[in-house]
Structure formats: structure tokens, C-alpha cells
Length: 208
Length: 208
Image: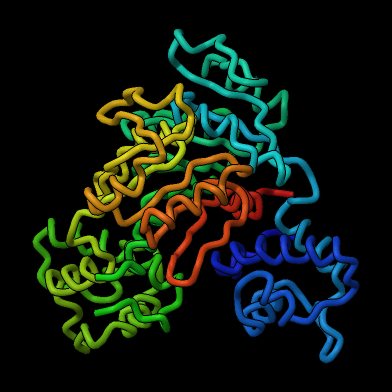
């Protein structure tokens, strides 16, 4: 099933919460689960679960709920969580180095297959299992190792140039940590890891 | 105006996009702006803008749009963006060190006033303008420097203990970068910086 452009992005974000809920339910050997059960574990309302899942076909049956293994498999396929996804990191400053060591990625099927920097002082350095490579090898590594996602961990002033390198290397999905807008050609998806946005949401809940 | 618990979280996330759009409009000396103008700059639909803003009162007038400076001021107040918010970082590994140098925070009024670690080897080390302090000084710094938000940058196995320290120090808002659930008492707000979630959303848009 191809990505449905009609599906709102918040729904896609919630799908990953539903997938995690279903994995826990499956680990508990639940065969069926109501929207209320999934909703409680995902921290949303049962109506939201039903509405979100309705974008992808008819899964639930009135009074019977959802089949846990079937729905888990289907969501995993939608989110490509049924296969390993290979990732390259461009920019190995402090943030890039932190990302290379971040354990959350591997746990969910993302494998970093290359770390790149333009700084000759950094090229050849070892960081855990990674050896930092020169950016000129980026297109080769992307093709040879089948990388599909590029993580941009460059400072704002280098972000657009780095983006262009990732796109030229053939990547069609970019996660940017640079706090600046970047431009990509049609067909390339960009998401921004906006660390400040989360602080702004927290701030909303602070007492005045 | 206190935080309205009826407001959905995605609305709050979008408010910060509206605030950025309004700041740009104000810089362009726009006095009034339609929901369509704000929507275009924030990357959402005009209906969404109207619905989100309707939670906070009556701002727009049919045919006249929104008053740019008034709405900007109001959103800034809601998001506490009208004053500096002081932040402490607990855990100065690679990620913590990267956060101490992240320029996006200061640009939006968040100031890191303390960096803490339990490792005696790190305590006293200088990182840019910061000197890493021992965690035992955390409560003192929170009170004396008026810190309101704690950033948790510890590995998963230390995350809960670190959270307890932040709460005991008097913080009521925590942004966790640890890829693990944490528990807080009532009255404390936690947000998780889930770096994997963004990769999962990107994965959805990948070709199969």
C-alpha cells in the first residue's frame, strides 16, 4: 500500500504510537483489542484510534475490536517497520556524534550505515562502530549500502549545502537537526527535528 | 490567561508556528493578516488557523483578518515567549554537550543556566560558557537562578533517577531525550524528544 497523501501527518505520528501499543499487547498475548484498549496505551481517545485507522481500510469489527497481530503487521508495513532502514549521518560535530551513539534508533529498526564530515581532521576518526568518512564518498555509500534516509547534523550556515549533497547522493528522505529552513526538490521529504518546539510546548504548561 | 486544558496538544504545537509567522509579518510591517496569509506561512489550512485561534478568544474580524501585533503579543504570552525561560541540563554526555551548544534555544528565549553531571571526572569541566556542576548543586541552582525547565540528557538506565532529581529540585517541566518512559508526580509535565518518531514518519513517505 503506497503512502496515502490524504492522510494527515498527525495521524501518521499516532500510527507509531499504535504500533508500539500493539507490540506490547502482542507480547502480552492479546489476540484482540478494542479501540479503547489501544487508545489507553497510546494516550489518545478511542474515537481518535478509530478515525486514524479508518484511513487505511476496515480493520475493526463492531463488538469484536481489532485483531492484534494483523493490525500490528499492517501498521509495521505502513511505517516500513517490517524491514531495516539504513541511515547516513552528515555532520559529525557534537550533535552528530551524539546521534551516532543514540540507542533509540537501532531499537526501532534504523541502522546508521555511514557517518560523513567535510572536515579532514575528522575523516578517518573512529566513533564507536563508525569511521567518519569524507563527504565525497556519500553517493557511493548511499548506493552500495542502500541508505534511504539522511540525517543532517550540520550548523545552520552549512545546512543547505549539506542538504544538496544528500539529495545529489540520491536520498529522498531527510531529517534535519539544523535550526533553519532548507529547500529540496519535489519528491524529497524533509522533516525538522525542532528541539525548541518541544520546549515551547512545555512553556505553555508552565505557571505564569 | 492560564493554560487551558481543553486545548489539544497539536494546537499548541501549531501556535508556535503561528507565532513565527506573525513575527515575520510584523517584520514586514503588516498590520493585519488574513487566516489564509498566516496559514500559508505556517504550512496549514486557513480553517485550521481559525479553529486553533478560536480556543483563545475572538481575535479575527470577518473581512478584516487578524491584527498582527496584537495577535503576536497574545500568542507570545500564551507560549511564555514574552520572557526568558531558564533551563538546566542534566547529563553532559555527547548529547548533553550538543544541547549546550545548540543555537536554536537562545534564539527563541530559552537560556541554559546550568549543566549538571554526576561523574566527578566531568564536574568542573568547561564547555563553551558553561562549567559542568555536580548534581548535588541542582536544587540550589534551580532556586537561585529561577530555572523552570529541566532537560534530561541521560542514558535510559539513569533516566528515572535523573527525573527524580529534577523533580526534587523543584522543576515542574521536563524535556526528556532518553528513549525510555519516565514517571513523574502529578503537576509535573514531561515531554519526550523522540528522535526515532521523526524517522518513522519519514519512513512512511519512502517508496516501498
